[in-house]
Image (tube, rainbow, N blue to C red; front, top):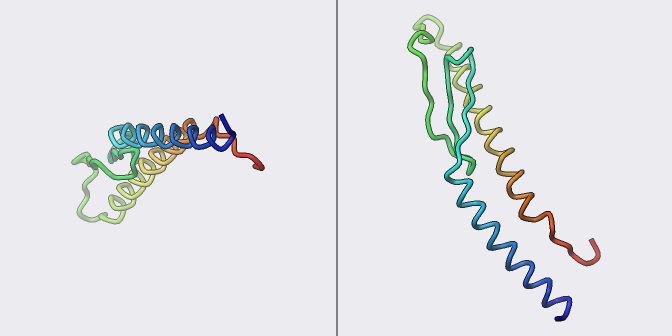
Length: 102
């Protein structure tokens, strides 16, 4: 088989693997918390937030800014974890790809 044929076959396999991994990542979740667990955020590894849970004890009407910071922190941590998991899984798909001249 010619090297172009091998490359095309390898690219097709990689595309199928990437699609499979993306579907798996869309179902996989990560959780992060802030404020000692007062705020928990769950994100899917496709980059979307699934839920945010707030402990009622963390709700202080006189300090809404603190609660907003906790929510933002937990959400950002969960999304960062989701991106890391996604990048690791997608790197597994492309690790064997050998492109001539690269």
